[in-house]
Image (cartoon, rainbow, N blue to C red; front, top):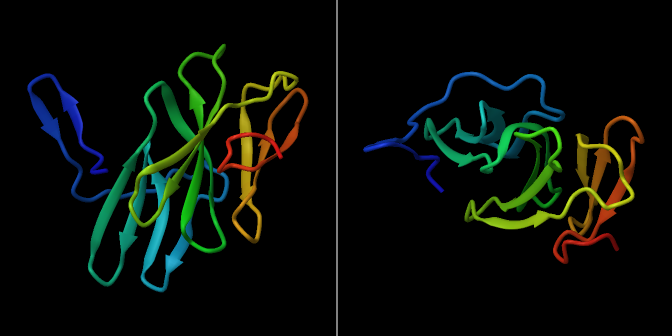
Length: 153
């Protein structure tokens, strides 16, 4: 994924992003000794300090911003929670493969019994096979997902 955006006849491709989205839970992580990942605007930025280069993962269509991020302990995956454009829509959690930057899974959030329309935190299990999602008010529901199967275990 390049992070390119189309505006009519022109295509805009970011080359370098300055800044960090500070209101995102767990908003920065190391992927290795010289590579960090962080949200900026409606993108994830993968910044390599040695090569002085950046790669971009654009946010999902229908979302207005990233609200939480988690990197798996094996450093193979990143999960992002996004707030939907319309308040009546459900929040989104998308898991990306950090080697290919391709979308691996979008979770069908939240489960029907959850009232919250917001997510406040994400966390992978130590083996990276399950993902915790923490909903916001009014019920603050914690869900455990077997994310590769896209359902609660």
